[in-house]
Image (cartoon, rainbow, N blue to C red; front, side, top):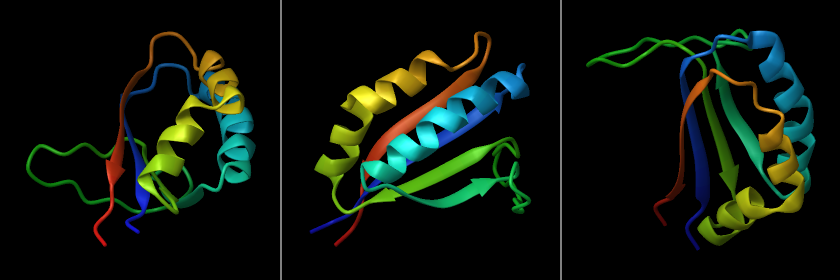
Amino acid sequence: MAKGYWVSVYPAISDPEGLTAYDKLAGPAVQALGGRVLSRIPSRGGRVVAHEGGITQRVVLIEFDSFEQAVAAYESEAYQKALVALPDGFERDFRIIDGID
C-alpha cells in the first residue's frame, strides 16, 4: 500500500511565536495519529536550496502509512484543535498527497 504524505509550505510567517502554539498541539496529535515528521526546514536547523522559483521558508513533510490515514489524521478532532491555534496572518500551502508503491 502506498504511503500518504502531508506537505506544508509556509511562504510567509508573520508571527513565529504564534506558530509555536500550533506546533505544540499539532506535533503530539500527528504522532498519536501515526504521522512521522521526515523534514522540517529550515526552522529546525535543516538546509534548503531553492530552485525554479522555490522558496526557502519553512517546509514540513510528514509521512503516514497510507493516504487514507493521512486524510483521517487531518480530519481528526485532535488536529482540528491544533488548526485553531494557527496565528492570523500566516500563509500556508498544505497538501495531502499519495505516495508511490
